[in-house]
Amino acid sequence: MSTNKEWFERALHVIPGGVDSPVRSFRSVGGTPYTVVSGAGAYVSDVEGNTYIDFVQSYGASLLGHAHPAVVERLREAAALGTTFGAPTPGEVLLAEKMTGRVPGLEQVRFVSSGTEAVMSAVRVARGVTGRDKVLKFDGCYHGHSDSLLVAGGSGVAQLGLPGSAGVTANAVADTIVAPYNVVPALDETVAAVLVEPVAANMNLVGPHATFLAQLRDECDRVGALLIFDEVITGFRLDYAGAEQFFGVTPDLYCFGKVIGGGLPVGAFGGSRAVLSVLAPAGPVYQAGTLSGNPLATAAGSEVLSRVAPADYADLSARVARFAAQLNEAIRDSGLFARVPVRGPLLGLYLSREEFEEPENFAQAQVLCDNGLYRPFFHAMLDKGIALAPGAYEILFVSLAHSDEDLDRTVEAAASAARVAAGTPVAS
Ligand SMILES: *Cc1c(COP(=O)(O)O)cnc(C)c1O
Image (cartoon, rainbow, N blue to C red; front, top):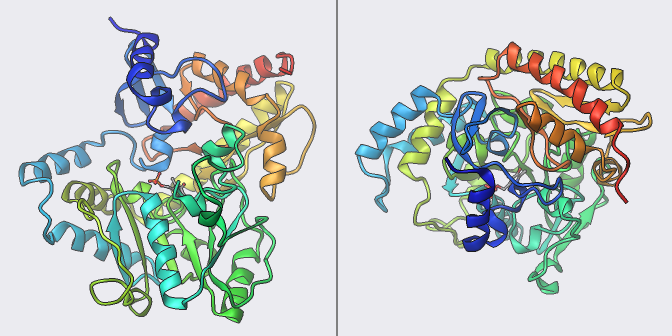
């Protein structure tokens, strides 16, 4: 039998830091990552045979849970027909039809292979449409790891305590403006686009104020800038039709990823036909990809979307709201203060030794995420068979496969993990 430690040591030898994405390393929580061999529904199992209730769910890519039998079967069928052709396929049309059929302002989408590419391409479209250079993003929002958007990026960047990334030139970020979340910035006519996570889910969870997105829409219209919703997390997870329906605000461009690939590498960006007419081959904005619209990814994505109805989102949101309230109470009973912000089925978790308000921006979230309590809490949960993301800046992903019993077990574990964390001296 092999151990997590053995696998991670081998990984460290041949993969930088032992991981292919920094958020997976246990850098900010300490210890050795578990190496996953399989997943089924709400659970993942590691090389040592431990099984965990999984709240990572591939950082939101998995909505139905791992290895849903219908998705696996669909992939089997699709794989047998060939996995990539470099020619149009029905699968990409079918997924595009499903997406545009649900999201009111989405008339066309183009598929890419990651969320990073989706946002990068949407920004290029916005610049192409407006002929302007500047892009405004919000502090603590993550939009993938492209050079110009990694600044103040939350998530893994914040976990490692980095302001941005080495290897990104000053020129690459010269046209990026960073503003605090939940404050509508005053724009001018140099701004091509405002990029926003409609629910900020990479600085733990920060929801938008009631009027934030609508006022952002108005401010963009005032100066002729495009509003881009980065829905890589919220798309088809927050709601049946994502953030546009949830908040009643229509952006000019949408970016998707995660859920729409059903667990395979995918991304997409889209908007109205008029806006997307600038894209090559019809227009002058070039964008391309060898594996874009991949038959396996689009088959998995279509299968996932076809298996969820509006009622599933309502049901999951109600269950998550109950779970959040119980989690909050269990942690508070155990000697810590908690806030468990909820937006639809998305939930965050902040811990503190003192009473506090739900954070409204990155600066407030950061104080809480960096207070040292998540580390012992995380490990105590893992010891009890509950896998949270190994970083305080991430949220919890409850899939449709999580049962009430799974959630009850998690609440019980959280009560004892909070006692452990409360009794842990603050590391200096
Ligand atoms: C995950 C994420 C991305 C990047 O997607 P990748 O597929 O990891 O490149 C972009 N935006 C948001 C909001 C995300 O959560």
